[in-house]
Length: 145
Image 1 (cartoon, one colour):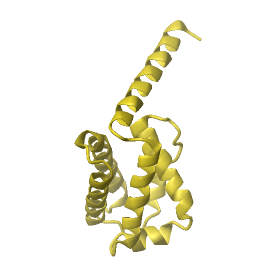
Image 2 (tube, one colour):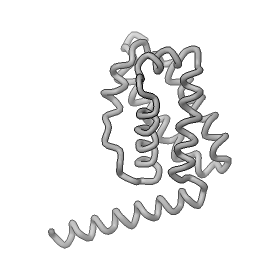
Image 3 (cartoon, rainbow, N blue to C red):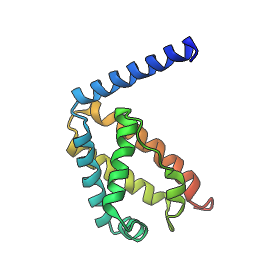
Image 4 (cartoon, helix red, strand yellow):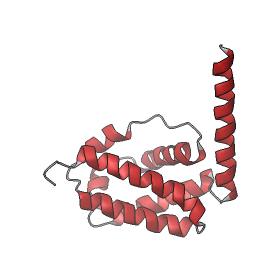
């Protein structure tokens, strides 16, 4: 392995570890991410507008929740364990509108505020959630919406 590549890999690993430690100091751990995910998707499942879409598309909720735990852990704790394809998965959801994404973000923010009282803990989640919603909306909502 080239020396520069090795040094870059070491730097990336140090940055990942520093990010993880910063988030853990704010109370963001695998366990609190799991609480966030389960609470959020309980709300999604009960939502009159989002529930029918997600309940119709997801047949194995425990598997989905485990996938979402891994997804958020990879993004926030930089665990680098998620290997899914979220855009392809969301392309299969029928009937999504801009209002659905707006409602999704409201429920996510509400849940974040309950699970993580510290604004600094919530900020990385919401920044990524907004970007994800914007990207998914751009590929799943028909242009005439």
